[in-house]
Image 1 (cartoon, rainbow, N blue to C red):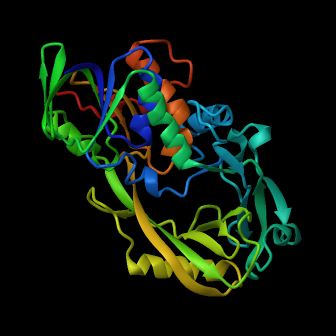
Image 2 (tube, rainbow, N blue to C red; image 1 turned 180 degrees about the vertical axis):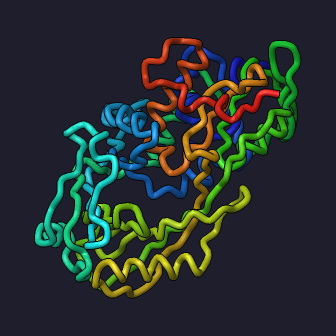
Length: 366
């Protein structure tokens, strides 16, 4: 079978790009797992936050993704964003908000004193002097968004094939011969959207890897001795050592912001990271922890410079990178997929300047 585009990876990166391309190209998404989104996408505590990643060019993709989420792109049947708000706690040692001037006024957090912060979050420990309040922060319905993208692929005539690991790929003339579990396929363009496995996919296609590094991130669901927590803000110490947000009436999701380098794998939480998460949560508020209800880990994969990688490989024609999204892949996916689609079609870039994301920045001339 021959396709215009084969996308390797059925997580949110591959699914959203497929949704952009399927209407006018013959697209196939191949996914090694039996279910798309089993790893990073399916384990994300995703939220949309305008200020996340300040100083990184991906912030522009976040801002441009917001109206697309609001519009339900690409055809979601339920709202994709649920307003929550974010409370960035400050202390005597750290109280400034980095890169504030980079945000448009409607997205800038505002400074609030301790009394106002306690209105949002009763039970603050004594070290917090106040907070920055970011009202536009919202939860992302990841499952609905991912499902809408895969549905859009199929609606446009594209295909999604699970349990299809890329074993090898070889450039033949103007196209590729792609060997997968159970057979072989052909395509004109091979897109690498394989997340933590993107460098390995490149090697199997005889393309030089970039140096992507998967990093483990832990989330713990705690039952606490307090009620009315479901709608509390997203709370963080300026993204220094923790965040937490309400999950149910008396439970919260807590993350210790760990970034442990690991090989690509089916990530599992380490007990030390769970303990650190509990300790940092208890150091933030005086709510008693009653039990660990759930714990899990996912992989966030970064390029060496921590900037996403979108674009054609500088040495191998027909090989396209869509990788290195780090911790911002879901909240940037609508605009990032549109940018990648424009690059693939050879259209003018209407989203953002693609140059900062180009894989050519890792190319060392021979």
